[in-house]
Image (cartoon, rainbow over all chains, first blue to last red; front, top):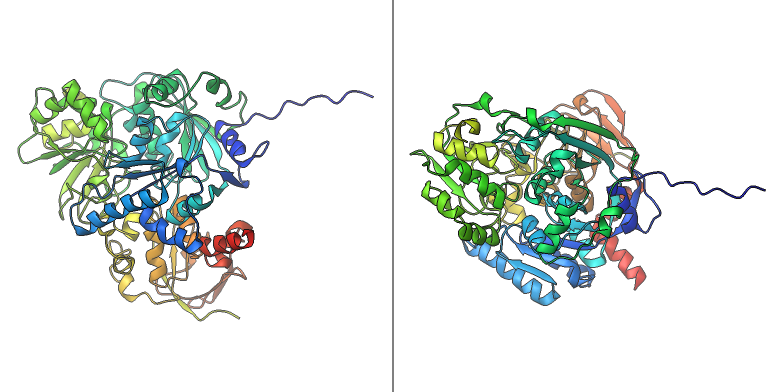
Length: 430
Length: 165
């Protein structure tokens, strides 16, 4: 009788590998509904404690594992009135009462604060109480956004259900032209593949992505939210591990061989693009998919330029703005507002001299946090005003009055438009 | 048995969470916030919607933020169900978790704003009385039907934890 032959298991994508591990299953396939154990759960001051506490009290339970819970106050910061002050006070009380393991009070935007503290590692399954949680997929983890009830249930049990998404691979090759960046890729993709990439994980790959810093990779993953994907992911490499260890996390080279998509993975689709052909992009109101080359919107007058948000105010985003603003002035009648993504971003930009370049050009500094991008804090728009912004969404009424217009663009394009007083292609300024 | 007729409120594609629950108003109480639900696209909606009415929409309903208030507002206004050609993932989960049926339905174009409709979720039937047309709705995954039948995720979890205790 012939011996049974070992059959090579069918190759699986990185996302499927992580979900299978978290589900305690040998493998999972797209469309399966599985229960997964969560390695880390994050929530912020808007969606977290004030929504969790009544639910946990109704259930009569505490946190399943306080050491795996991250709370970040980044929405109502700093308090601007009694209501926001009360929300922030309640967050602090919750953290104390429930013994939350990781708390960042007004230190910046959650999606950037977490990797700044080495909390995201390849192979983890992370639940984030915010739609831009896919940002962390840059670190090779499966991280998706959830609403408050889902997150409260996760906080109570450490578990949730997932419908396993299929993986769509998006490969970029070629070098960017000067003045083009990861943000332009995402605005381009919002038009090219649309905003309904439902039940999909976007796996970014290719030489262009390999050459990117973690800041730029986060930009790619962040806006998977706008593309309607469950999340995004990038296979970890030396750049990933270096960033994690430099920020106090633990990582080692063995992660690289395991946490990757198997050779021969049967992707839902593979799309290939050439980064060297990409022009700076601008998305017109009120929808991120309304993207086109910046030149198509040139000469649109602006009232405000905004450099902020998880997607658009990391250290390298500020560097891009400074490359344009060095030795130039913001146009009279235009206000350029800059809200660095985290307080560490501000600290680093102070030490490097970057902030002096920005403020010399006339930029006005705002506190770190979600701010105007989420319709909160400072820098909201009046009826009829126009803003060009490094943020990720330009829905009607998001940044203030519903009669305001928001154009989305890269830090290069926003900074150049602030100087010109109207939307411009930034390549003329570099 | 079918439920009493509901008015259908029709919306287009890409109804986002900022028009469902504007960020700048998120400090308001849920009841106050609900009064602004969808005002940017239909100022009449939150003023005139009645308990039991249903919302029908095009593609990608609920895209954007994870804010649960988008679904909470519809619930507070008494919306009985949202039928759309497709839903953004987080909104869909939020709605189900709150016990608000979010039902994928390809033929929402067959329902106009103001139509009188009858929805029977369990029997997967939609009757448009105004057009005298009847539709079969797709079945919901057992995991989702279970949450809806319990009245939401928290009541379901409450029962589970009691059982385990």
